[in-house]
Length: 474
Ligand code: 2PG
Ligand code: MG
Image (tube, rainbow, N blue to C red; front, side, top):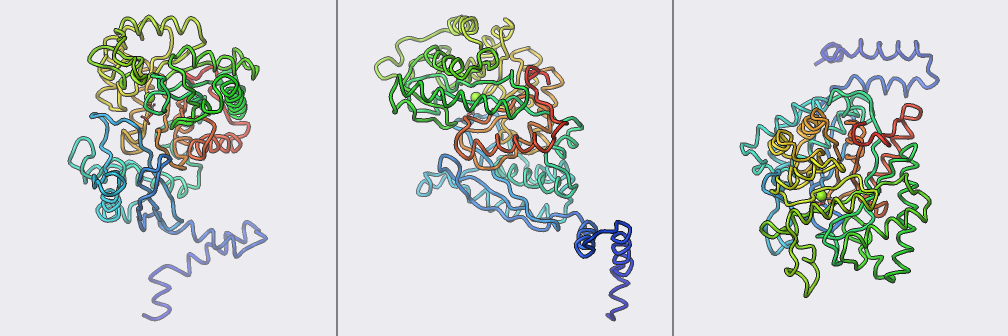
C-alpha cells in the first residue's frame, strides 16, 4: 500500500485537518495537546480488553477485581461479599476447594471473566450499559446467575459503567443518572454504623447494627463531621464504661462492647450524640438482622450469650412490642430486618403501625419477585439494595426504580466484606436514593465510599443537594 493509499483508506488527511482547524479556532496556547485530545475523542468507543484477578476483601476473603480497557484507558472494579447469603439472591461463585482459602477462592469466576465474558464483550461500546449486561445474561441460562457467577458479572458490569462515564466525559454519578433516566443527583444521608453485634461481632449483642443518621445536617460534609464526632465520643464513653476491650470493632467497624441488650447500645449512642451536641439533629436506625436468631417461629435475643441461649424465646408479638417501645424511648426512625426473612406476617403488622421506616434486607434479598410481593402485600416500606445480590448495574437500577415507584425508601448498601471500590457512592447519588449505608467512618474500605461522596459534593458545588430531612423521599 502506498502512503497516499494509506492516508485515503483511513481518511487521515481530513481528520488531521479537522483537528488543526479546531485548534486554530480555539486559539489554544498548546496546540499539540489540543490536537492530541481532539484526535483521542475521534477514537471508537469500544472495550478492547478485560482482565480479571483474585484480590482480598476487608475480611481477608478472596473476591473478584476486573480491569476493563477501552481506547480511552483502564477502568477498575471489585465486588463485595456479605456474611450471610440467601437462596433468592444471585449466586456468588466460589471455588469450594477446601485446601485453598477454606474453599472461598474465586479463581473459577476469574477464569470465566478472562475467557467467556471477555470474548463476548470485546468490541462493545461501554456507554451501552444495558447491552453489555444483557450480553452477560445471555451467556448464563440460569435464573440466579449460577453459571457465570454474580461476582464475575458484577465486577465487569461496574467496570463497564465506569468506562462508559469516561467515554462520555461525565462523572460516574451523572452517567448512572442518565442510565436511569433521572437527572438531578442527590447526596444521601449516611446511615453510619456505630455499634456492631449479631454475626458481625464477637460480643453478646444479638442485634447486628445501631446506626446514626445525621438528617439535620445542612450538607453531606456536615453530616460526616457530625457522624465522626459522635463516633469518637462514643469511643470515649465505651472506654470509660467497658474498658479498652469494648472498643474492639465488628465487620462494619462499629464498636462491639460486651453488651447484650439493644437498650444498652442505644443508651451509649444517645449519650455520645448528647456529648457531641447533636441532639435532635441525629436520628437512630437499627439493623436487627433477625433472620440470624430466628429459631422456628421464635426469636432468641440471647443466641450469642453462653448459658442463656435457647432459654428465653420471644414470639413475633413480643418483638413487635419491643420495637414499639424502643421507638417511643429513642429517636429511632428506621428498623431493618426486624423479623425473620420469611416472617411476612409480623413484618407487615409492624409496617402497618406506621411508626418508622421498615427496611427489607433478607426479606427482599434485592430480588424483584420478592419486592413485588412485599409491595403487593404492603409488607415493608423500604428496600436495602445490595448490588451484589442483583448482579448487574442495569438490574440494580431497575430494582431501585421499582421501589421508588411504590414510594418506598431506598438504601444503597455496602456489604460486611468490602473492597476499596467506591462505586456505591456514585450509585446512591446518581439514583437519588436519599440514603446510603456504608459502615462506620473508619477503615479504608468504608471511607472509600464516604470520601467519594465528599468529592462528589465538592464537585457539584452550588448544585449539590443533601437529602437531609427528606431522606425517605428525596
Ligand atoms: C446488612 C449487611 C451490611 P452483610 O446486613 O445489612 O451491614 O451485612 O453484608 O453481612 O449481609
Ligand atoms: Mg441488613
